Image (cartoon, rainbow, N blue to C red; front, top):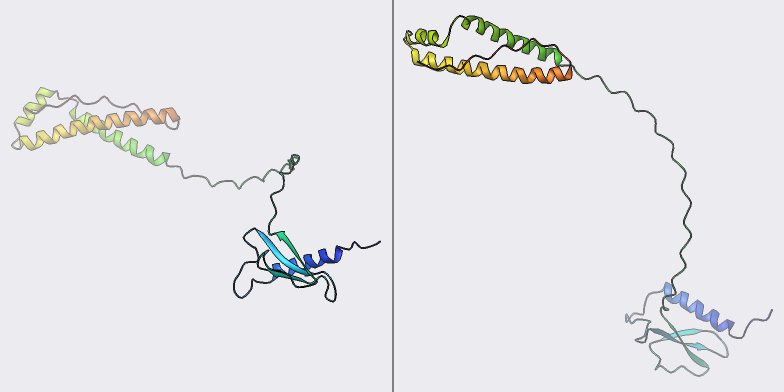
Length: 198
């Protein structure tokens, strides 16, 4: 098969391009690409060293005898957008993970809560037993007879308020625990009537 006459020139150009790409610019730091966006060169067309390529600064540079000018764009125009590829197939289904380790058993604090509620209920019942035979008028008269009436009166009023708060708190706790059906709490005693100092 015959080699085309231009093949040596094209091979020389290709070799020059590879050489240019692998070497740095000249010592002066000049760019190989001219203002017109092309790289200009002279190549030897005849005689010894045929196909030798020399890059020049611009299209205005004259090539020596037996040399010819050539040039090419440093970067070509963008090509047309390629066709969209076909969608890929579905990936394989992953395997299910193994079961996790069983968790540790939590600490049950219901028993300690039940003990505290029972202790509070016992205290309320004891207080009710002490005050069960007295009405407000009798309590006022008894307090009035004590030398430190003001201090006792304030303490009794605070005790009555706290007793009411305790009953309310126990009622709320009883509702929660009954909802959870964890404990069967005894019924909450009736709150004491409001106390008035004499």
